[in-house]
Structures are given as C-alpha cells and as structure tokens.
Length: 368
Image (cartoon, rainbow, N blue to C red):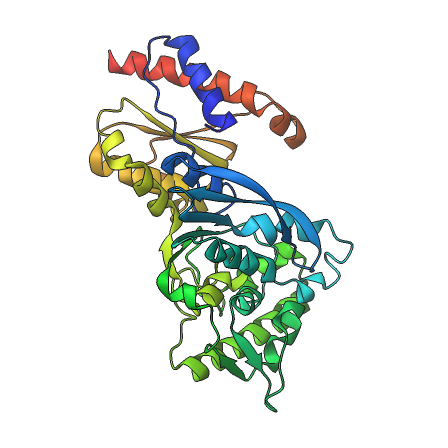
C-alpha cells in the first residue's frame, strides 16, 4: 500500500486497535496509476530506461500484470512535467520541442513483449504535442503540403506543418490489443477548455506561447480529421496529458475516466457496502475537486452503495458547497498549525496519522 494509506491506518489503529481497515491506493490516471493498478491486479513494477520529452535517456518504469499480458504505463514515466521543469529551457519555449515519443516507445515495447492489454495513465505530462510523438512511435507518419516527412519528435513546433496523416503503417499488434487511455481531466483537445489554454502555462508556456500552441495543435487536429475521416478532438479526455489522449486515440486507444476505471478494478462498490467511514484525499481540496476528480468519484460511488460518511484529507483545504453536493461530508487539512509547504510535505505521514486518529474517534463516537 502507499505510505499515505499506511499512515492513515496507523492513526486509526492507535485509536481503534481492532478496527478493520481496507487500504486502496488509488489514482485517477495521473501519476501513481501504474502502482495503483498493479496493486489492484497483483502485478509488479519493473525498472527500465526510457526517452524523455527531449530525446534523452532516463530511468523509468512500467507495470506488468496478468502474467505479463497486461502492461500499465504512466505518461509521467517518460513524458513528465518534473523532467521538463528540470531543463534550463523551461519557461523559455522548451515546451515547443517537448514530445511524447518516449511514451509511445514504452507502449511499443509492451506490444513487442506480447501484451494484449495496455493501460495508459494520462496525467502528469510536461508536453503539449497532441500525442503526435507517441503516435509516430507506434507507426503513424506525417507529411507536409509537399508530401515531405514531418518528424513529430521535434514537438509542437512542427504540428502546424502537418497536412497529411498516414495510419497505414501502424503496428499490426495494435489491432489485436485493448488499449485503455484513462484520463484525470475530461477536457477536449482544443478551444478554451483544451490542453493548450488550460494547462500549458504550468508547463512553462507564456501567454504568446499558449496562442501558438493552440494554433499548432488545432491545425494538427484538422489535418488528422481530413486524413482519417473522423474528428476525435472533442472527445472527453482527448486533451489529457497535453493531447496525448487524442494522439493515442488515432492508434485505436479508448478513452476512459481514470478514477471510475480504477475503482472498478478494485471492486470498490462491493467493498464499501459495510464501511463505517471512507477516507479519501488529495493535495488541494476545493471547488475543482467536485469536477470529477478522484475524491468526488469516491464520494459518488460510496453514496450509491453505502451510508458511510466520506471524509477528505488534504494539504490545502478550501471547502466549497459543490464538494458536499457530490457526496463529500467533511474536509480536513492535515496541517495542525501554521507551517510552510515544505514542512507539511516533510511531515505528511505524521500529520496523516494524527488526523486519522481524531477521525477514528469521531466516527466511533457518532456510531455509538
């Protein structure tokens, strides 16, 4: 289980030594999806080398379940925001040369390994290339108006040059595999709610950069629609991971809400039926939490199957009526005194134990 789950259990048992605690390390398609899925399915996480958004070799990982027939991949394993931030080019236009090619290579490796089911967590990316790089790694080819090849490994800077998209050389094994693309944000590819406008700023893009990224990715999506005869850009989740959801959809991947997908893997609806309380959490709990994020999904599924209260633990608490509308009954910040964010992160386990100790006492008192 995750360290956070372990800390919460320790706090509960300190107050209620005989309590039955069911720990489910969850994810919603963002970072941690590989470990959550491998925990649910009894798989293992293997270390491996990968290619980062700028084409350099990095240490990475991939999960395998079902005797190696199911692969689980985090976008953040090869195409992470943390990696992009570590380069001097961050906030200096580096995003224009950041590609998801490395994530595509991980999927390719899984297919070559013989996997017939691949789960890709679309979250934590430092890219905004519409998934063009990943799709190229899987066999898609791009051409400009003069039918000259365009290399998507160069990132979003070349997307507006793409006029034709050729899917004829996609890996044959893609057609025999089930590719689930589980997203943490259900945004489309383009527009005011799309990946460029909503998320590229946190990836180092300036206001002017955002305009160019939006223009380029819109041009790319139109070229794809003309070439394949179908516009996939408006699908929920197409804009997840800087549009990786869109690019992998071109390769036959199916977009699915991440939190719902992982709760189903665990059999959550059955597990929660006899619960006295459900504790969930995230970094910051506010009105956005109600928009389909993991705690909101946990709350909704709990209320469908149980009368148990749902309590959200978080680093920063900014409660909104919308939280209670989706079934969250109480929100508590882990911080028990004024402290710097660095101190909160350093002492998360201790703070989680203390909060869980108090929650256990309250739930016990209310129950009796």
